[in-house]
Image (tube, rainbow, N blue to C red; front, side):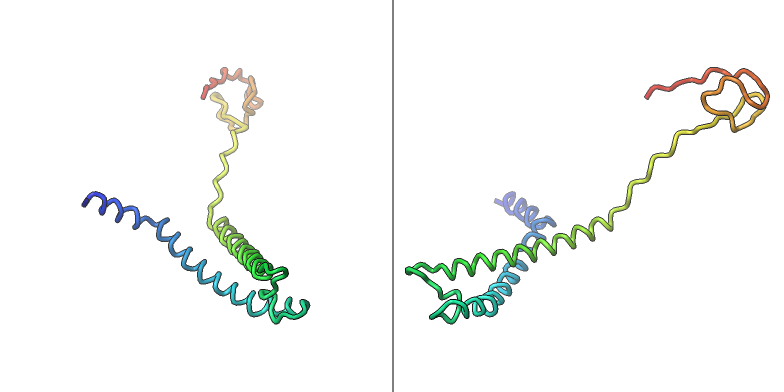
Length: 143
């Protein structure tokens, strides 16, 4: 039994589990705010255009609670848009923190003549342009 308790402690103390728990609590609080905004602002305004109702949520044609369902859909879309916007900001901030990878150094284009020690001899040259010496064959390394 101690082994299971220890495994549970290890599982629950992981950073991503705690982050998820905090996210769920914040999301439920945010959902309550959005529900209040939709119920208190959006549905009364829509209810002005539907006769015999004070709120759109009360609209029930044929006995079906269509207004409450549409109310829930509006709440969902508002919540989804706000979460999407928050994630865009978080991802943009995360991208700013990432350091760009350094570029690979460019391959050399010149070499040094072993005879006159001029260092501006082109890599493919077989004769030195300064002392006219024949340059040794270049060793190619296979990677």
